[in-house]
Length: 257
Ligand code: ARG
Image (cartoon, rainbow, N blue to C red; front, side):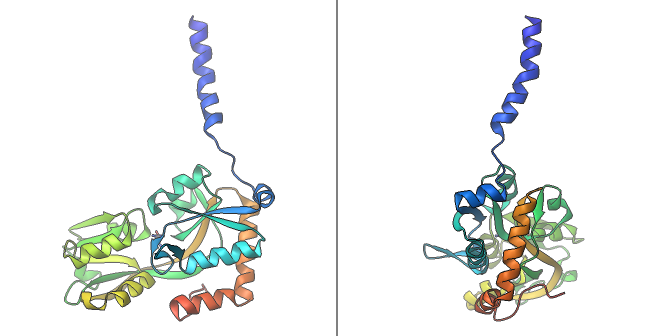
C-alpha cells in the first residue's frame, strides 16, 4: 500500500505535466499547417481595435502583411491584454501583437521580436487637471491592467492611488467621469482617443517614459523569431510598413535609432 502510494505520488505529477503541455509550435509545424495563429486585444486604438465588426489597426494590418510575406494564412485570437502572456505560455497561439513594450520582467517569460514601433507613455487629464508628473502628487491615476503604464504609475511618488482598468477605453471613461484625475497610456492611443472625443475637455500632458514595442513569442522559439524579424525587415524595406505608419499616424513610428 505504501509502495503504491509512493509510486502514484511520483508518477502522477509527471503524467499531469505531460498531459498539460501543449506543443510549442515551431516554425516547421506552422509552415506545414499553412496558418499562423496570432493574438491581439482589439481595444487599443489605433494599434488593434474593432471598426464595427472588423478587427483592424496598425498592428493588425502589420501582422497580416508579415503573414503574407511568410506565405501563411493568419488566424486571429482576441485575448484580453492581461491574459496574453499566460495564454502564450500555454501555446494558445504562435505569437501576440498587442503593443508589448520590452521589459526585463516580461523577457523572463517570453521572447520579443525586433521592435515594430517606438513610443512612450503619456499623461492625459482635464484641461485644468494634473498634466505633469509633479502635478500628480496626491492624485488618482487610471491605467490599463498589466501594462507598462501601470508599472510607471506605481513608481511615481506621492500618488494618492493607481486604479486599474481592463482596457484603455474604460480608463478613459473613468477620467471623463472624474473617477480619476489622470490617465496614463500610449501617446498615440491618447492622441487617437482625444481626436475622437474633442468635446471631452481632456488634453495630453507630459511623456512619462519611452518604450520599444514588439511582437512576443514563446521563449526559445528561435526560428519563429528569426522568421518574424525577417518578414518585418522586408515589409519595412518594401514600403508596406511606411504606408501603414502614414495611414494610422501620419508619421514614421519605427525605431530609427
Ligand atoms: N505598451 C504598453 C505595455 O507594454 C501597453 C500595451 C497595451 N496593449 C493593448 N493591446 N492594450 O504594457
